Length: 398
Image (cartoon, rainbow, N blue to C red; front, side, top):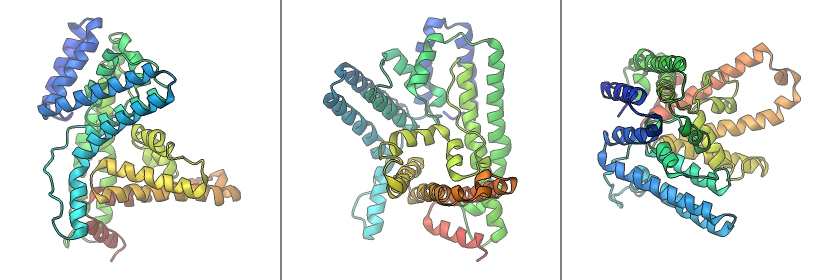
């Protein structure tokens, strides 16, 4: 079920009406679980079994780690089994076809049959949330895992489709207080939903025609068309995704639940590191906490820090889609993040004017960061690397 459809509008009205008029406070958690089951089953009912089974695996494994106490060996074994199962399911459904096609392309023959697999709705989001729960239990950040809390966390429908990626520690304590939201705040949450819909329908969708040179490059377009297309795509993806996040955050608020903010004016970032602290915040913080830092973070010298950034951002790119263009998009940002670290340490620290951040320096930094991000969107938008190369040549006037 997609937010910007009449089906969700009807579903949302029914849920909110029942939630605030008929359902008692003690029944609200169970009601949210039921609403989430209906919401998810609407798309592909069969895959409701998948998210339920993975949720059970995560819950049972998490409880086993909690019972293991300080026994590091047992806790680590449970963590490994749980993460391998959850990530393995994600890899199978989302990347089996990608791997098979890649092998066939490299071999230039049909060595591996390409399976026809329907990717379950929101599998990238709920698997990342499950991994977070397991890892944080292992490190002692989650000390209690109750079945009801975890079920609401898993099936909370405002975040099921496109996030933001929640953290159990901040979500679970709110369940006991469901139904206590002041009614005047509900108007603000409703306004947030309206803003999200406006971003999606009025701004993002209006950019569709202008983005065609980037989506389907070809002879009818000149360099100017590609520049307009690239900038329009930057606007479209921001207003589309941030609008969707606004709807999710606003609707969660209407249910009395606060979920993480996902966008904080990312195109006003002064550098690429700052951009990733503002863009898709719930994902970038997840990649930092559960990929970059476990790889060693920035504690092993500049070379290893750069390698860790490349790997973390490649995974971030592949998470968005099963194609090499997404991997390259991630690596593009990995290069940008590594270059920014070297620039900050080797150049900015030595020059007073750069370190002070004068208006001219800030303007140049903002423009350079925005253009860097826009050029990366070309890889994100195109279906093949050949198309991306063609677009880059046209952007350079060739």
